[in-house]
Length: 166
Image 1: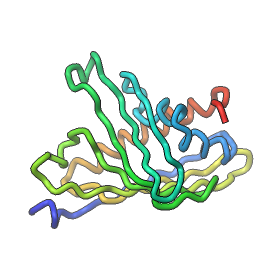
Image 2 (image 1 turned 30 degrees about the vertical axis):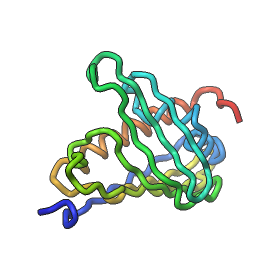
Image 3 (image 1 turned 180 degrees about the horizontal axis):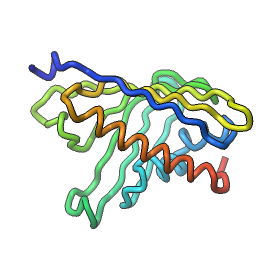
Image 4 (image 1 turned 180 degrees about the vertical axis):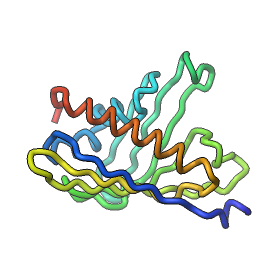
């Protein structure tokens, strides 16, 4: 099956955080905070850039100078914001600048889309995270679910710390 006709999978993760919605929004949209959790604590030297507006770009990269990813240099993801409704809803494209197994340089790369909905839940926030456009190749969706669950676990820890700069 060619990449242009590859079936695509969708995954949804729901999670409640012990933090107000505005705090979760800030952790997802401020570059310094996004860099702290987006790479699921894989190490390296993470950084992020955010132009938080419809049509604005975002990027998150990390350098792996040693360990499991030694020699790979920079690994990254980027995209454009499609919907920005603070502090309730965020939709953005996700393009992998790193080789994740299905975006070979000789293959047509179809960007994925992530939708985040934040709803107050008592003193906390209920997050619904939906990632669409993952190749349905028998392994990519499971790998994404594992990585994204680990990132959201780290986000929970970041939210438990003192808030970053406003």
